Image 1 (cartoon, helix red, strand yellow):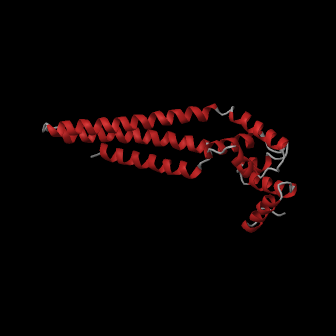
Image 2 (cartoon, rainbow, N blue to C red; image 1 turned 90 degrees about the vertical axis):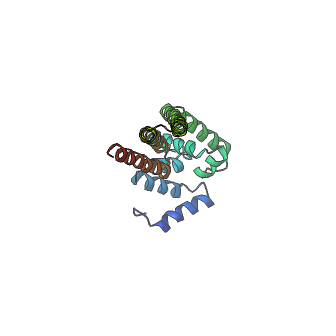
Image 3 (cartoon, rainbow, N blue to C red; image 1 turned 30 degrees about the vertical axis):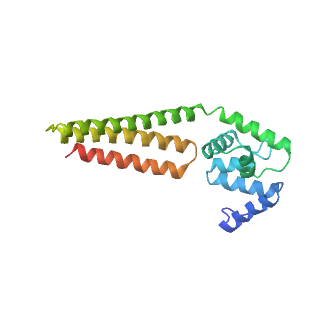
Length: 197
């Protein structure tokens, strides 16, 4: 098959594999196409069914994708288009589990992301309480305090969004990572505008 195939041909390969998980030529063509286009997670997705076909990087990328989706063994079986035989399923699951255990950095990034979001919420709540108390007592510095608290809150929001974008990108959740990346730059921009006022 010439590369790159049309969307119809690519869809046809997937349909063939859905109808017959043992269609090795369709599986190999999909793996080749995704490799040529730099999609390691998708190459791994279709390559794991054939022992030795998937590279270590592809298996890790696919394991990270499954983890990001929260996929269980049944979902993994369906996504991988595995044949219905227990030895293959068990081998693939062991391979993916081993790859997942080699991704400690993703868990660390996840933890850091959760901590930064917790700090952001804490800062916002503390800021609202502080502003309310100052306003209630008629403090003349309430506006200045509100701006300072807003800048601190935007800084923590930018940090949380940036780390979340990295965490999602490592788990191959590109759309969500892009959204948080945009939010990161938006928070940073508003913060800079407040600093320049």
